[in-house]
Amino acid sequence: MVETGEDKAQKLRVGIIMGGLSSEKEVSLESGRNIFSKIDRRKYDPIPIFMDSRAALWEIPVKLIMRNSTSDIEEDLAEEAKPIPYESLKERVDVVCLGLHGKYGEDGCMQGLLELLGVPYTGSGVLASAIGMNKYVCRRILEISGIDGPRTIPIPRRRWETERADVTEEIAREIGFPCVVKPCREGCSTAVKKVIAAEGLPDAVDNAFLWDNMALVEEFLTGMEVTCGVVGVDAPEALIPSETIPTDDVLSLEDKFLYGQGENKTPARLPGEQIEKIRETAVATFRTLNLKGYARIDMFVRDDGRVAVLEPNTLPGMTPSTVLFHQAAASGITQAGLIDRIIQSALEVHTGKRGPL
Ligand SMILES: Nc1ncnc2c1ncn2[C@@H]1O[C@H](COP(=O)(O)OP(=O)(O)O)[C@@H](O)[C@H]1O
Ligand SMILES: [Mg+2]
Image (cartoon, rainbow, N blue to C red; front, side):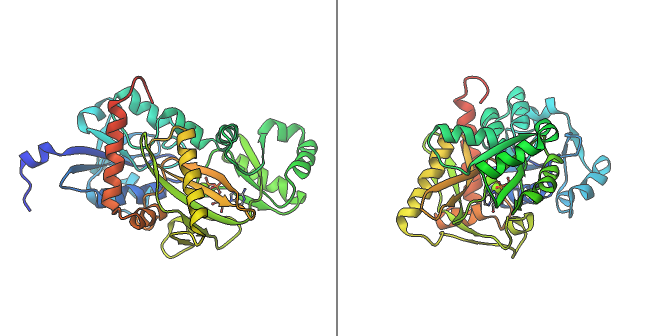
């Protein structure tokens, strides 16, 4: 079909931002590329935008989006891509679809920039994104709202350096072993480690400190790990939850995002009332944290049936194989349909704003 200038003019220009600075940038490239390929072109005019490792934005041609890695793209930006200074983004796109994950993309930084520029963007706002990224703050807020989660001890770097014996004793007393050590703000299972005895703590904690100045030590949850997408703005709806079947003690990056690895079962193999409890918990989390547009909430159904929230993912993976699309499909929503709902939510949220979100 030949597209006339007029057709193009009526379509909403969607800047799909991918790449970025975080440990999850390769997954982000896959998410962005998938959004670019699945978005409904009858309605939207997608513009692929790459965020480089210095946080500069570039409009990239399709041949660059097909590259294997962010560094392959970065090599040829000067030659092949067009720089987009932040302040000109508003002239170039009508709405931004965030394919970013992790630090600077999912944690409120990018959201703050887009608020300043006055550009609508997909997903949650500044505060909700920042809280969602900080597993400790998030847990405290959920706890106040009566939402269950693993017992957690935060360890600031300084405390670990000066009071290691006390901290170790506190962990043994309050959490016990096995426990899980992780950085407070990361994603894709980066530096998430199951520790079976006190001797294993130093390595795990030091490793977490490579990624953040705050490490968390958590109760090791048993039972069934589940994850549930939620979509919407003021009346959020849960999708059909999936069961996550890990191939190791903690889910690795490979389990979650690469084809054929790890396993999810949608719907989770649980009785109907448990499924409903998971969906209710996902929606309660979404509402409590004031999330917008879409999110995926990771949870455990404990052995005693209680549903504990592990974490929200405020910009969950949008790769072709991602569980969010399986859940949407189980609810009769196509990939293009889900992307459409997410973009429409962004516009709805933007229209109703009184100050930054
Ligand atoms: N407290 C815990 N108990 C049991 N398993 C956990 C715990 N914390 C993390 N895991 C496992 O590690 C994975 C990644 O941890 P998560 O906290 O979700 O970090 P990330 O933000 O990197 O995804 C989870 O999907 C789960 O399989
Ligand atoms: Mg997770």
